[in-house]
Length: 215
Image (cartoon, rainbow, N blue to C red; front, side):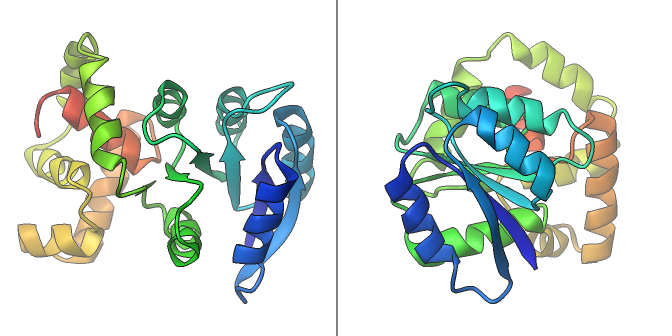
């Protein structure tokens, strides 16, 4: 079972998400919270696999809550929900380690699949905004180029090839086909890339690759 906590200050949004997700046999809607402070307590008690996180909330917003959550050992996957296509807070949440984001009007089937995708360790970016977010992240952080180049210099040539494919949004199977190796080999390469970059997040890898100008 995939344990899920919903964090949003709008009761109607929480109700809608429960209706969308509640019928899935492998989903356990373990709890919900109306703001970031409440979320920290609920998540600490319930230890969910995935948190659906609104960004704009009173008391403590979703960005601060995401940063606090992902600084913990055994942190849950955080899937950010936003009303806006491309937003500074979304970019900052991804930089903080969030595993992806969806606009709130994402179709139910895609919302359900997104939860399963982040549990598998793969990023989720709403198709309608993915290019905007990546472009904005790159354009607004030009000074990060040198840092990204330095960090990526720790990768082997093959690991760099894999990282570039990750930045295109390719799945492990697609990367394996492109590089003519097994999926197991790609998984091993990605594990080493994560270790060298100090992350467990494919979105973070993609941003580093794009900051470095490799795609």
